[in-house]
Image (cartoon, rainbow, N blue to C red; front, side, top):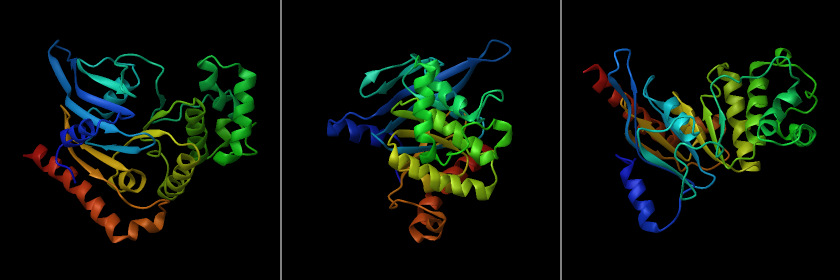
Length: 275
């Protein structure tokens, strides 16, 4: 476990390598109803390597979604920078694929047209986007569901459709904001194994917001734990478990130790908030 993210950032800089993603001293504040500053992010640093799966855990209201809006270029930080492949992209859009908490499927569009929507909005001809989607659907467990409407799908299937739409955008950096929070525990366990398989077949750098330390450790290569608002990085846990990871992995003693490290950080922050 690393106490502060700065050690990771400094070590990476010393190596001379270029990370896929770097957040450097991100500060952000909003204004409350009285016009007074409301700090949300306070000097947040984060590093993600090429094709690395990074989980972000933090208290409710700590600014995790605000952080993703900054990463996606939907919001410019008050100060600090966002770098992809060493290039400053702060405040600009078009560099990431972003799946928000809700699947946001359009009820009047069939599955294949929901999947093709992202590439269409990026300028790809509809016919070409539909053809790519049709070819890839079996790989995402969606073969045979092309002409279904979202209302005819289970919660788990809807998440697969939304995730495939995100992958089809062909961005090398994916932002997944609690994509499994609305499904039941058994469905979530299946989606965990499925997502790992998809990431192995279609490598991407993934940032994944979750409130669940077990989910963070099961999926990630590195987990960042944030403080309460205004948030900075409280600690980092590197996850060195072999892949693929299944429901049996949670019984591994090393898994339990890594989960304990994340939980210790989470509970320490909660105790400080109570005090």
